Image (cartoon, rainbow, N blue to C red; front, side, top):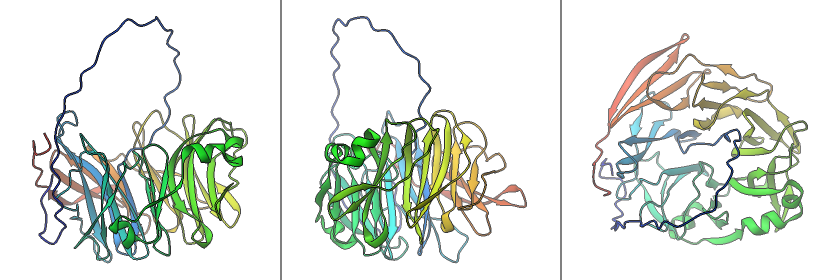
Length: 377
């Protein structure tokens, strides 16, 4: 766990460690079938709100020894400097997810070890102070597990595919959550059956503060993006003829509609919704897991593949552009001004910030994070 300014919340959690025993038995022989690795999204990401630009990255050491500590950083509006903003007092080995809206940022802590629920923290002052909250369930292992709408209504995607809702970000902090739908119910709905919904990966909001959900479909060429209209789930109409099965890696609300990052096989692409019309970008290729991906202002987005060059796109009608090879240790990118990006590189407990300027990465800042190794053992 990291230590920071005293103004951050202090929510003490006692975590007990338990060993796992695996039994061995006789199993029938099976034939392995080799398939291309699916592109998956990491929890490392960045997002931009009215308060500033936020980045989530993991630091420390081995996850197997519970020495991996997820951190939240902020580059406050009208500044070029990054600061540590991780809410204090909560074990964050399981990962962080965050969403902004209605003047606030909500951070969720994924469970780790014996923790079965997800603590929350809400800030309205760019991470200077935090209000603690609680979701009495496990948040999903995806960066799109939380969404905050224009009215402050908050959605949470759980590990089992259930979507819960709270009336406002403030009531989310107070723990007033209620189920909105389940994976089983969504898959059994007309659009869920039509696409062959297999899982939910992101929640967001559409027009008129309507909840949205997105996930993976078995039917080729259909993207599983759905809107809730008065309790009835409908397809958002994102069809991709000629594609294989499509996975939604991320979904966010924009000023004019929505933006999604999607994968079909090894092809990655972005899509933007305005009204009922979708615009789809050209594709870029990635093998296996993404190191990170995220959204920026104006419909922009970026991808950090496990192999190959980082890619950025400016919005509808734009083309992907390959960024210069990122510095060693880069775990997340964050959009700047004028198409620039910051690369946040991690080495144990040190964060180095590199800024893209005139086609090259310049070192602009270093932050030493006071990681307490062994504190979660």
